[in-house]
Length: 171
Image (cartoon, rainbow, N blue to C red; front, side):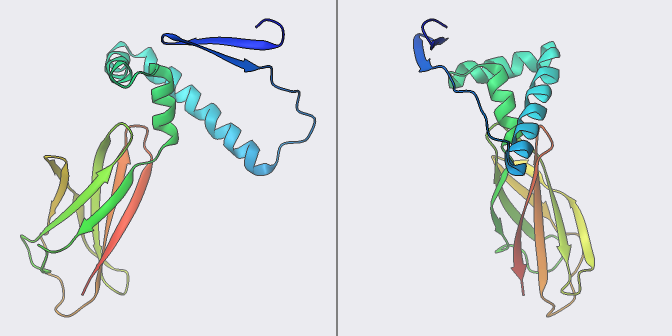
């Protein structure tokens, strides 16, 4: 810092910004919660990068994306996965029917679990989907009651453990 200007080097660039002003107002509960979540993300990144094996993986990803590894891990913690689509076109309520899921994350979706529920909320079956060429596939093992409306929930989980659920209705 020099003359109330902060100079920061990021890659080949030098970034200049003014000195932040002192905060006189109290933080709102939402701001406090966000600051706490960010502190958890920084702590998670610190712990992950202490492992040389994980550090190597994240360093390679960071290099590919032109980012610092610690910032990449922090971002991964703060960004939950997204279930973009739950496709039931190959599911007929019978064993062997396939449910396809497209789930994405800024780094990696590590697990997708599927649950098939009756209209009354009873779980008919549940289990892990398997990833084949970027698409998660779940093969049904139980016959669904004829004519009953079912809810299929697919829950994607990323490396830090964030989870997001997407649903589709089968009738």
